Image: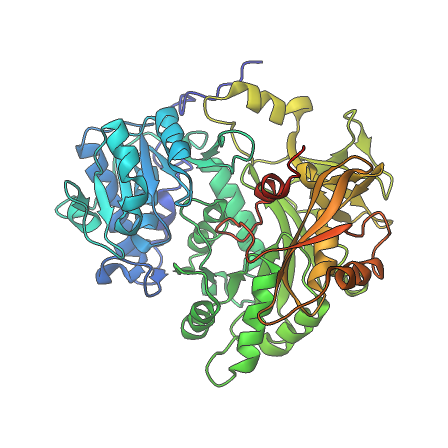
Length: 552
């Protein structure tokens, strides 16, 4: 079977009235609620004051103007538009405009190294470049190396870059009519890049259909507790311009006829104030650690912040302590829905674990055992062993594999990686899970992060959770470092809370009380900070490189 990961469109002619197009998400709501707010940008998340609060009609008109401006520059269907931007109303509108024009948005993580950015530019060959002025110094050398010019500046925390146009200048005087472009649901409208750990990142091809299915699926969960789906107000301060969160947050808002609240700086006070001011109903918290800090902030500032509007909170990567589940129920009301999500860029349709659906299991096991529950109704999923056989018995770990309409179309211009990812007719996630006696999935680890020590498999996530339970520990990561006796030595890398001190032996003894001997760290390394992605995931490959013994 041919694996086409190069062409970005080709399927069949589609009529305007029947198509699946991400760009149509705003336009369709204008027929119902043209004056309802679609996008609310918090302070710092807009360059031009006029874009701080946009109705559906205003947002749709501006996205049309951006699309028409691209077409008037001579760009064609399938051409790529490069983004080097963090969260802003302008960047979100620009992405929707790219989709309206039948083109492909290529948003790039603003923390990537210059050589990786250069690789991505060579791979996708963009026709237009857009960047925040704040981030221009990071990529100016790359542009000089490639003899490229910046086309559009979003002037946040800086001026318009010489030789480029501001976002507002680019769209001014452009028609607000919908561009006349053929678009099919299978067309690729976005390429998101995975985090490369041992090689360059891969370009995940996102189709219009992927986004529609993922957003509708998410909206069903995020609108729980609301009288009308249009009351949905989703808030995200985590990245949604270059992150897969754009599949389940802004478009879930639009497909519900709700409002998307976008912030730029992921800090606790800013998030708490946004939830209070905008009466946010659904919030993507990222990690349990951030959610715990946010909860404490609400509790300690009851006169200043108000969380009672929240009806749904979801998070990922680890289990939330039942203590904070109870605190949030007190803050927001007993009907608050809390759930953990297991998913990834290639397949945002993933597993969900609702605290209230399995309360006894949750309270008995969290946070040490990380339950991720069951596949959502859009997803078929099983566990497979190393021989590719389906696992049905409890307590046996295997790789999670997926089938869903909300799965990538492939890795751009990388047929080999695509074939490997879909071997056997399933998408291979790289996540290791096992079932409990009731058939609920328990997250073990990313396959590459499972530690093989003394013939046993150790979940780094489980050990990290126990380390973080110590009152002196602010954050922790656990990795396997080469060892002549155990193969890999379970190593805890710890950031202590301000002013705290604790001996290595005490931390190891603390872990031994809650873990098996083979799981307990053999050594503790103290550090000032852990390398993280902008979403809060710890980059363990960097820790393995940094602390690897010199003779290995």
